[in-house]
Length: 266
Image 1: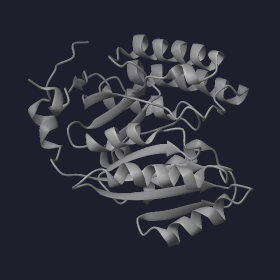
Image 2 (image 1 turned 180 degrees about the vertical axis):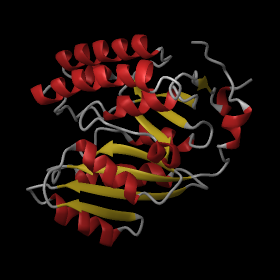
Image 3 (image 1 turned 90 degrees about the vertical axis):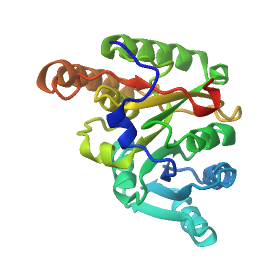
Image 4 (image 1 turned 60 degrees about the horizontal axis):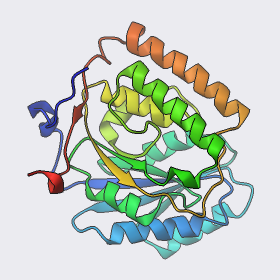
């Protein structure tokens, strides 16, 4: 699959110089970190001019004080809204609820544990509009447990090779066009959802831009190594292979187009 270094005309028509974004914060039992996550988000947003932003907290049936904290944040900050699930539905359904609630052109999602740093989120938001997908990959992966790093490396390698994707990482902090995302049939319910989104959008010929970023060093917790998530990863991968190469081959057969950031162009 050949990758170009500039957006094609059709892709350019879908981009705008000024954009709006919904930052989705998915939270399940995050009473300790949710306020810090919103503070991080607001700090990133405040550093950018000419970008219309809303923050959508999706409380996925938390059993701790997450719901009350989310409601208090919405009262405190006008750009914050809340979506509440009565019971825990899992990341996939939480993401879908946030996507349905999003009012803006683009959407990005971050966990409620304050894992994503201010600089990483700021750079993602700052480049919105330069490509359809803005993909931020973590540089300081050493802050994660060794086993998690090994599994993530295998996961990314498998996806890159299978689906011919020119990315440094597959499971990244990214921003997507809401319209395209709503038009895409997404099946994954857990850990694989972000990767499924990346594969399906890029193989529809979307433009993409990659940026390095940093994770907050103090945040190491993760549910990615749970057995149910590993089972979901295998099942979703096999389903995705079938869709991309057999049942929906015509839809997912166009090469993605790499965009160089404007501030790096000669």
